[in-house]
Every structure is written in C-alpha cells, then in structure tokens.
Length: 93
Image (tube, rainbow, N blue to C red; front, side, top):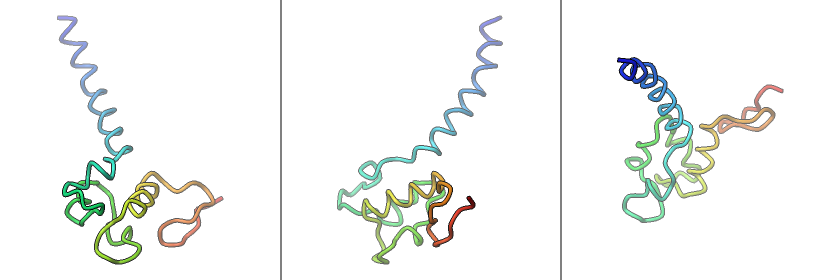
C-alpha cells in the first residue's frame, strides 16, 4: 500500500519535471533535419514548440540553417539582461 501512495506522489512530480526539461532543451538541429539537407523546413521546425519560424529565418530563404536555428533557440531560452532580442529590443537592466 505504501508503494502505491509513493508512486502516486512521485508521478506528478516526474511528469512536471520531465515537461520542463523538454521545453528547456529543444531537439538538436541534426535531430530535426529529417531529410539531412542541412536546413530545417517549416515542417521540420514545427516540432519545436514556441519557435517563431518566420522571425528565425533571418535571410528569408524559407529554411533555417544551423546558425539561425541556434540563435532562435537562444531566444527561446530567454534573452539575458542587457542583450538585444530578436526584434531589436533591449531587455531591462
């Protein structure tokens, strides 16, 4: 009986922790580049929750190269105080 209660108490915490890790660490570029062409299409990038594909596509070619993807990932993780965001705004100091 104690085991059941322990599992019931630990499961929600594990799910909550696991969900935050998944959001904090999106998949790697190579994992998302399913066709292996060295660029992420909008369809491939859609697997990353919260990624603004159009804003991340800095050169406007309709695909994300690894540099664009890493920059967007950094933005998703939060801009550090005093750094410039994707739209050019500076965070509060």
